[in-house]
Length: 305
Image (cartoon, rainbow, N blue to C red):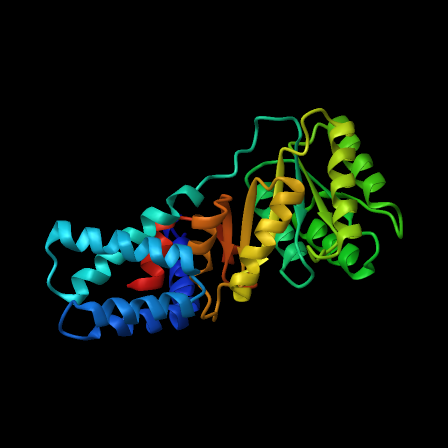
C-alpha cells in the first residue's frame, strides 16, 4: 500500500513538469558566471514574461538583491536558491487550509468563468471531502447549461453524494433549496456550482450577488466560503478575474487549475502582491489526485529548481 507521501511526490513531479516552461526560461538566467546588472535585467524580463506582473517583479528583485547582499552570494546558482526563498516568502500569505467543521453545514459558493474547470474542480473537491468522511450536498445552480448539471450529477454519483437540481429553474431558488436541505439532512458541506461568468457581464455578476444574498437568507452567516476557480494558463487575465470577482463578492479562496504546460506560472506571485486571496488548491491535470493543497515553498521549488 503506498504511503500518504507517495501521491504527493508524484503530484509534485507533475507540478514541476507543468511549470517547466516558466521555470526553464527563468533558470536560463542563472547559467552565466557572474552576478551583475545584466543578470538582474534578464531575470526581470523572464519574470515579466512569466506573468509575474510589474509590482511582484519589482518586489522580488528588491528582496533578492537584499538577500544576495546579506549572504554575500557570489555564484549565480546561489542566487537562484535565494530567489526560491524570496518567492516562497512572497507566496506564503496565500497558503491557508480550507477549514471544515466550524459551521453546520459549511456552505461554499463556487464561481468562475466558463472553461476554467469549475465544475470539474467541484467534483474533485467533493470526492476528497466525501472520502474524508464529510457528508456533502451539491447544488446545481448553473441551471441554464444542461451539460453543467449533467457533469455535476456524474461527479455526485461517483462520490455517492446527493445533488439538488432543477431544469431551467432560478439559480438562487436552487441554492436556497440546497442549503435548506443540507441543514435538514445534517450535511457537513453544501457546495453550490454557479453559472460561468465573465466579470464584464454586469447583469450576470448581479445574479451572483443575488445568489450570495439568498444563501444568507437560507442560513445566517452563509456562504462561509466564496471560491473562485481560475485557469492558470490565462496569466494576467487570471489576476483581473480575481480582482473583479473579489470586488463583487468578497472572495475567501481560490482554486487555480491547469498549471500543466503553461508558461504563465508566475501569476500566483502577481496575485500574492496585488490581491492576496488564499489559494486553497492547485490543479495540474484531470485525475482526482491532481487537485492538491497549495504549499508556497513547494510551488517555488517546483518552479525554480
